[in-house]
Length: 289
Image (tube, rainbow, N blue to C red; front, side, top):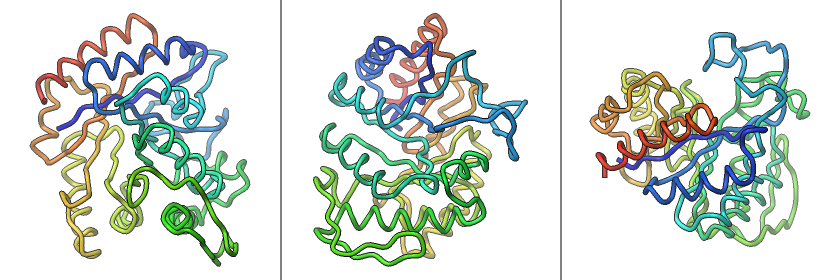
């Protein structure tokens, strides 16, 4: 089981020096990957609260906010040489698919093929609508946008006529380094998300999931993969971020479930907390190597 770290960098703590040093440290202790979440804007009131906190709000420092994942990965690409970089997750239904395809394949090009494209439909209704898209149809739109991106990454010339996207004789270059394209890792727990993983995915990503929850999803995911003529272990990985409250020494349970990559949440980005957490993650990586 490979070990990575999840760290959504937030200002003002995540300075350029901090991010550069953190990426090099993660690579230096042998971690497989670094994953970042995504939100472009936050709201004081939400229709649906964030499930990771009791008050339903994303914990950001006073006067700060989440850094952009694409720009941050471009910065980290220059500071590292082996560390994989994963979006956990990119909110595809609120993104322009042509711009997203270009950004992700450019990152793959610049990193020499070190990008994992984790995707999801999002939980923040206000954010989706502020980006100019509808809320109720975001699942169908996600599927169409993924199909657009997949074709742009793999075909020299693309014609596309969908519900949201239409173009003729369109070219996107450079193509990704990874073949057939950047790995798409699908997040989500509902039946449509698992079908999306079976259709598009090189893997499934579960965030803040304990072993019992992972076991339940894997059973349903196996059924979705079977319907698509696929199965785990044949170009399909299980990637999980455990709850912050779960002791590091209990995380071997995930390997027993068949989890391929464990992406441990960094949590606080205060220097003293980072040092303590990274020591724990390094010890886990050594035990599972």
